Image: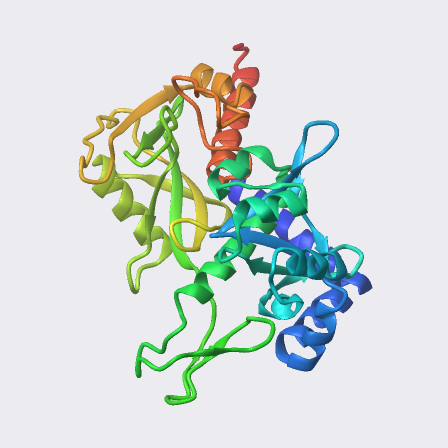
Length: 345
C-alpha cells in the first residue's frame, strides 16, 4: 500500500511540473547555462553565491535566532573578496547549483584558501560543519547546502584523469571535466546506497556505527555492489549486518546524501517474520543494533536534539532532513493508524 501510494503521488508531482511553464523554462535555462560557457559567465554577473570554507557552508543568524544559508550577490561578493585581498574575478571559480524561484542563478564557491575569521567578519556569518548545519538550517535549505558541498568535493577529487594522470579541465558551469589527452569526459556521480527500516510488525530495527554521534541510531544501509539490484542489495546488507532475512520490500523515496562522498539513498521498508527476530550483529560493521518500540520511537521523534552543541539524549534518530528520519516517521504513522484501528492508544 505504501509503495502504490508513493508511486501515485510522485506521478502527480511530475505531471503537475510538466504542465508548469515556469518549471520548464527554468529547467531549460539551467541546461543552457550548463552547456554554454559564455551564457554561464554572463549569469555569474547577476548570480547568488553560497560560500564554503574547506567544505563548511557559511550560515547567518537572523534577528529571530534562526540560522539560514548566507546568500551573496555578485557585487557584494566581489567587494568582500577585494577587502580580504582576493581578486574579484575569483567568482569565476564558482560552480553552478541551480536557480532561485525568481530565476536567479545560484553558485557555490570554495574559499578555503582565504582567512576564515576575516571572511566571517566581512560576511557577518560563520562557517559550520555540514553535519552540524543540518540541525541548524530550515528544511528546504539543507538539500542546497548538501548539493553545494558535494559538487565542490567532486571537483577537488577529480582534478586528474584516471587513464592518463593528466589534469582535467572543467567547463564554466562545473557540470563536467575533460581530459584533453585521453578525450575522456567526467561527470559528477553519486554512489547508490540502499537504506531500509526493518520491522517485525510492532517494533523497528535501528543500528549505530562507531562513527555516529553519541546516542544516535538509524536505519540499516549499505552500498550497492556492481551488478546488484536494489532488492538484492537490501537482502544482502540486512543479512550481513544483523543476520536477518527480510520480505515484503516497499519503496519509500530517494535522496542525495553528501556523505561519505555523495551518495544516492534509495529508501525502503521491509519486514521479518515475528518468530525470527534474533539479531546477530556484524561487529566489523556495527557498534549496536536493537529493536525499538513505538513508544520509544515517538519519544525520539518528538524531542530531536536541535542544538548539536548541547549534550544529546541517550537515544535519538537522524534529523528531519535525512531520509532515515522519513522512514522512521512513516513507520510511526503506520503504527499509530494500526493502533487506532485496533482500539489501542
